[in-house]
Length: 252
Image 1 (spheres, rainbow, N blue to C red):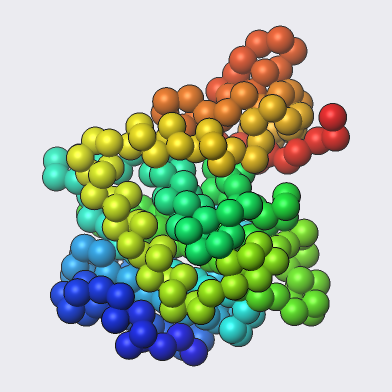
Image 2 (image 1 turned 120 degrees about the vertical axis):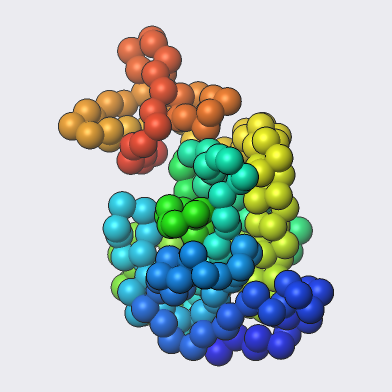
């Protein structure tokens, strides 16, 4: 189990009091979503074992005991407004940059919410609306056993593979600090800088991809993201933008 005191030691007392470390949980998202209206901004739930972790589009996120970090944070909406749809991309940039600082400098981003190392999935981000704000969650593989990889059911990497084999408490603190910065800057209308930095981490740009959007199945060349965080793909010579889609890399 994660050491709550070691994580809290990275923060001032008031910030540390908003951290909750759980043992085995269904999901770190669930308690924040259930009590969002009564919890302080920046409340965090962490665990190294989830029974029913969730990814994008309701997919299961495997969190074997001790093999991964699950972290969720509550962020109240900006005064008089809502979080922009591209928030998840900004959180992805901040998480990837935090992993680089911890030694995993090969981590890249796959639109819209995956962290990759050497083309395999290292982690993922999920942002869900709640009363008065959002709950943002991240799952990061720490050190997977062979049986863990078999259960995940897709090519997966872990932080040990990526060269960032730090203590999970250090990783948790790094993500929290990075996400605090994102929420503060986006509240001030400064999301553009995060989206500009996406280009340096983009694992898809310049590659042939398959895009599944609703009933559409298209193939084309990934062109990166636009100023709103939409995925741009050249299909039959025309640039198209996608707000929500499944994307897979295709052989060139």
